[in-house]
Every structure is written in structure tokens, then in C-alpha cells.
Image 1 (tube, rainbow, N blue to C red):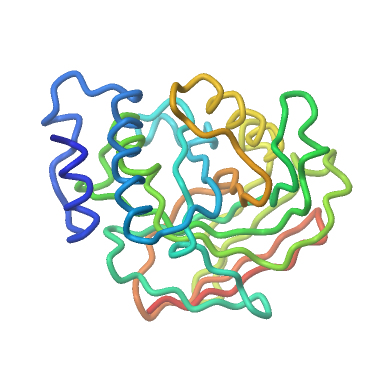
Image 2 (cartoon, rainbow, N blue to C red):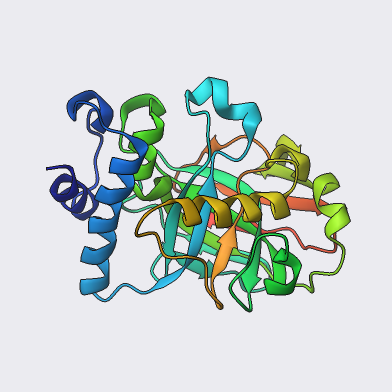
Length: 255
């Protein structure tokens, strides 16, 4: 049973053959059902939900990964890290094939409603998600991703700033550096046209899924990678710069 495998796999992380290659006819919806069992197991173990991540919102990456639609996962108190002074040390222990993703996130002050998203946002921040993949060479399908909690590993959140100018979100630029060398850059327009549109897509996606909890006040929602995702290893230092919005960059050291 896939749900039981997920619980065991997250207890003892390692590479395994894709779920979609072993569970005949696995759909994205069935993947979410299995992920819900993992979620309930974590709640029973004392984990607390802190927000959501939405992934594969960057359409420039769809053809390469073979995933052609966004998906989501849960962020927990045990996977959420608030940067101090725009710096954070992140342990990669237990994260299989980890990759770094610079993003934009929002903190919600109320449940968002379609067409009235601005009223629900308390603040925005620059965030970095560390994703991971249990399948060799990151060969996945949408159902593999939905089953595995959206490939979420860690979420680092920088200093919050007021959300005052949504029109600038498509032009915001993230620059990603490895040991001080620029390796990638990308804009908010890569994320379904804007991080705000990505948030709206998640609201609608959850509304279509039976049993999915809608977004609620207090959640932090990270909206998808602006660049590409890049492999990271213990001992490395990565940093970001943000242009176009008053968001400070982040510096992350991996252990």
C-alpha cells in the first residue's frame, strides 16, 4: 500500500523506484490521498502544519521534468526555518537528492478568496525551499510528486515586509549564487505569471480537491521557484539577491 510505503520511506529516507512505475494507474488524485495518510501520521507524531508549498508553477521547467501542472504539499513546524539576520544554517540530513529553490512567499491573515487575494495577505517575504526526491535522477510524474508531499524538504523564510505593490511581482528578479558565483536568475513572471497568481491557483486547486483543507489565516505559502532548482550538498554556502522589491537576500550554509 502506497500510504504505508510513504510513512516508512519518510522514516528511513532513501532512493526507491518511482511510485508511478510500481502502483499501476496511480493518478495525481490518488497521490494526494496517499499523502493525506502521511500527513495524518505526522500529526499523530506531534508535527504541526505551518503552511503550504506549491510546486511546478515555473512552466519553463515542465518539459525537462515531465510534469506539466502545479502541485502542492504541506509545510510543517519541523520543516520551517525563519532566517535570522538573513542567514540560516540548514541540515540536509534525511533529504534525498536535495535542491535549492529561491521563491516568494506570503503570510496569510485570513482565508483567501478568489478575486480578493490581496485582502488575505499579511506580509510577503523572500523564501528558499529545499526540495528532495526519493526517485533516482529526479525522474518523476505528477502522481509521484503529489504522493510525496509535493517534494517538500525545508522552507527558509527571510524578513517579512508589507505587501503593498502587487504590480511589481511579475518583474521581481531572484539571483542565485553558489560560493559567491552567480549560477542562475529568474523573475516572478516565471511563476504562473506572478507569485500572486500562483497563490490564486493554489486556492482554486484546493477547492477542486475532495478532502483538501483550504488555506487559512496564519499559514505561510511559498509560491514556486523563480529560477531553476540546483543540487546542494553539506558544506556549501548559497546566497540570493532580490531586485525589484524591497526584499533582502538570504545566505544559507548547508550541513
